[in-house]
Image 1: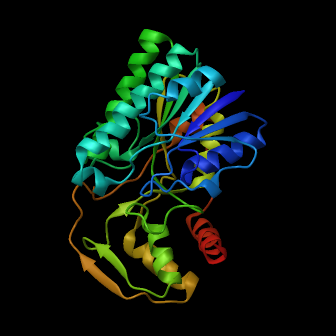
Image 2: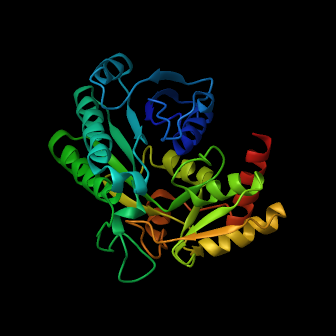
Length: 307
């Protein structure tokens, strides 16, 4: 089938493109290669077409009219909690206005479905763990707010225009191609510092936990969602909690380097703990995570060593 992957030069998006290509689909990547977004031209699969464009650009209409995608995998986003807290207007322009530009064009050109990169950040600090689809969404950052708002727009476009969707609420995704110089993704940031023999910064007390899910497992969920999970918002995680301090100790063991630690206060918008029950994704998508955290971390360290 014909698929547009927005953000397909980025960390998660490029892995999704790779999987779609393996499955034999015709893929167009739309990415603006924003410095802070992690999009890199070299990440784009050579068998995919590439359009250098911002999702807010009105010329996006031409891309949709020319290609007429059956499915859009929408992964272009402002994904940093820190940036969203500093500049919530910019965050909303990309994550809400940009999304609407995609949805309007998808509806006009007869796209069947949108697969949307939502986030566990929509839940904020939950009353209980693990988080599942019934957990109230109380986002604590502008980033989380825009992702929650996006889900409502997806429901509107399905009801009013017949544009189907599946929203995948990711845990903390990690793996090869994640930007080690960015503001999001503690594992890749730490790996960059460890391999450079530099110190790391640990915010809060380091005991805050996240549910870390490997990027290739996430890409597999995007393959399964092509023809499953109509109108669903699903949690994508491993069901396991890991603290920042545990990440540090694991990387020290893998790399053989004890990075000096600088402690810093809690970042605005950061939730204390996250852990996801992905049983519904298993039941509806047929998805379960396949990669253990330590195995994924070792693979990611090897990727950055070679890179």
